Image (cartoon, rainbow, N blue to C red; front, top):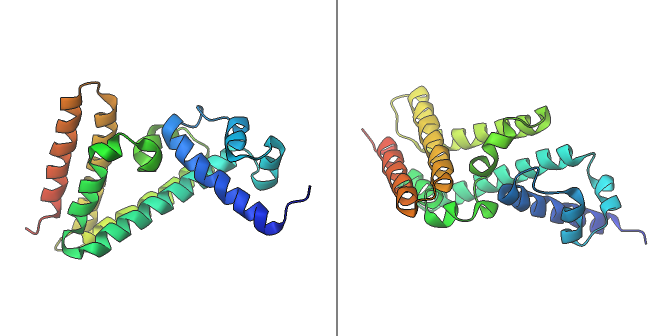
Length: 193
């Protein structure tokens, strides 16, 4: 049965959204194309009509996840521009975010895997991280663009590192302590000096 262009496009978006969540949840190696397509209700053969390879899917799924993350950060910032960094830090450095990697920050979930991924995936992630840093730099106080960018880099790396550590430890109190300490640190970076 032939699939219309519109249906093919909808199928592609469904696979990308599902892949984006499953990769964050299970890692790149923890998701097979066959299982992904079955979960999407599509045939394995249909995958190759939409994507060149699993690596192509990974690159596109990472780009989608970062774009979704960036849009969510922009929405948080738009609600209260003056306290935008606090809102972003509070959202990301929360137990809810820590406990649901499939719906959260793709860098915190897959950063280590991306560092070993193919060039196309790394390029997509590099562009996305730069966009996130640009957003954060625009929200940070500073006497210069350079100082605001440095604060943005420090804040984002603190957030990502804290999420990774909070997920890695098996002590709930320590995990909460890591998140709370990182939130406090990021908020201090965003305070007007």
